[in-house]
Image (tube, rainbow, N blue to C red; front, side, top):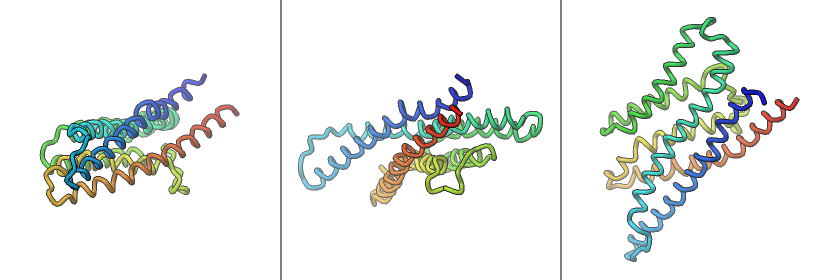
Length: 218
């Protein structure tokens, strides 16, 4: 089998065996947290243990980082095959070649620093840098975006979902500090949208895999 075809499948394989199971687990724990909070608000004793909230946060942090990493993996393959190899970046456009390499490194580093950031300012800074890195890497001319059909584009669904995960990671500490519950409500809304986008990713991903298999067989 063509090595190019094999590397093309790394992104969907990681999505199926790692990211989508995490999405299911996070959704389950979020529902448990919600049910426990409603029971306590109604003055009832909930059978759901208090640690469910901690588990939800911990696995949610894993999910956010995994989604960003998966996006970078998805962008890396066409960058190497279509950018560095087909377009000969390191000889035809050396500056762009080094710029793209640094963007991958800096985006990954920004994600790591986002996990470690303690203050609101630094979390906002590294969340912005991580999001900008993903956007810039995805904006290169060798990335297939299906812009004329953006409303059913695997790329745009993934880009928005990735940014929403970055935002969720950045605001998680604010949720527990905010007594007005505004951050919690924002978190819920953002992640409902993200979940719908992940479902869309499943459909568009299957479509794109079918197209890859079809053209590979010709």
